[in-house]
Picture 1 (tube, each protein chain N blue to C red):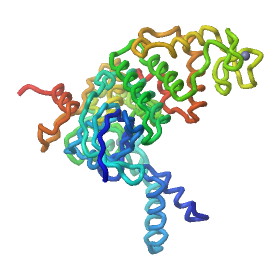
Picture 2 (spheres, chains in turn cyan, purple):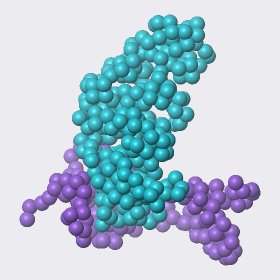
Picture 3 (cartoon, rainbow over the protein chains, first blue to last red):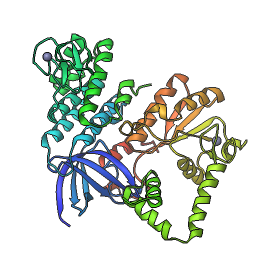
Picture 4 (cartoon, rainbow over the protein chains, first blue to last red):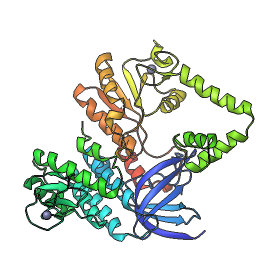
Length: 246
Length: 197
Ligand SMILES: [Zn+2]
Ligand SMILES: [Zn+2]
């Protein structure tokens, strides 16, 4: 079996059989990789904590004949300790991991997605005041990268300024004359807030919390837009929205 | 895709945790080829378990009646609660005989990726129990992984206003392992949990 070397971020790990796990890794050069880590659940496993989700690792992997590879060696590059120690940061990071898992294709190189994820997690690891905003900014960037950039400053259909309605199916904000039936009203403030998040540096997106009312309006629009275009339910979003901190 | 009963069986089996479509197919054909007696015994065991095993009203562990064996036991220390993710974790700790108190089974761990938040776990019951029963120490024994740690943080934050002592099982170097194989996350946790000798 051919052996290859990669670096990546572990997105998730699910149990397999008695002592193994299947880990999903967003790699720099090979897209999403699913690989078996043999014996990892034994307390004396040589993998230890190296293949836990939310770890930036360097890997040696055997390419399998099916879609499953096998991890041969792993070393930690970064473990995002601040994120692991804070519920708000953790919830935001989970949304990033889930979103990447949903859009990444197996063994299809996507360096920009990998770098976006690494940038998102590094931004969270600095302990921003509003971690959820970093996750939301990340989600907007991920949508743009996947070809679903929402129109937020002008009508998605005719390009006229000051749109007052929003429709996921039509590509974001729309004006009254272009709006189809599923479009709903949106305030200029909510659109401006989302546009700000879309354009913000991830390191600055969470510097301060937005006006709660604007967030209450903007959040369902963003989440709905993301699920509509990714064609998947995002399980972590309701938990992010409710905040994990008791 | 197959037709009729065999596909129904495959569909049912593939709903089970940890069973993918391929394993479900293998299990289904194994059962179909096995003697009728074997299939009957399995079906009977599942039905019996469903009919006779309940979850303890107090702690959420498996029980044969309203309360589990441990919650019924008057000699257990009622001031100590050990919080675990699953009944099997309580059984593991019980086998080691190291906890004199009782257990509280959460029914899983917080995992936003899988859509599992605090509301899906028995955390509110834990809070009520601690307040009601005069518990003085809560030992958190969730798994030492990302989700288990997040769950531990959540439980600790939830119990903070109550003023109860909250402790967490130490994580660190595996007994019987070699220091040179330890990774930096395990090592840093071991260092944080070090004790004076
Ligand atoms: Zn228009
Ligand atoms: Zn009980």
